[in-house]
Image 1 (cartoon, rainbow, N blue to C red):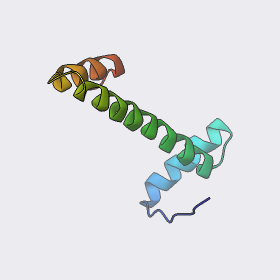
Image 2: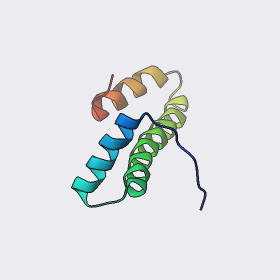
Image 3: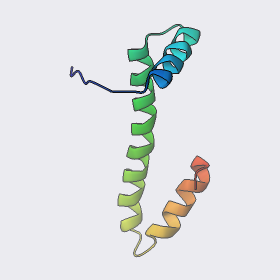
Image 4: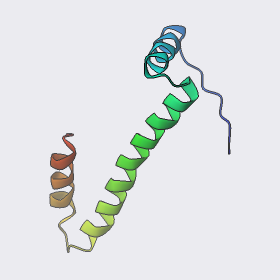
Amino acid sequence: MSAITLRLPDDKHQRLKTLAAQQGISINQLLNEMATLILVDFDAETRFRLRAERGRGKTERGLALLHTVLGSS
């Protein structure tokens, strides 16, 4: 397991601390869960890009569908 140092403004740190406390978890666990969610999106898009590339020039259409499903722009 790796450790990182993250510098945050005091107000953001306090808000994360409050959020973690409300969820009954540590800030470390909260950030770990947030990183997991971001990586899930990244991995899904990466896999989708690979599949779309095999779709003979349909990458943009495939990504548009993915963003529609994920509800992002």
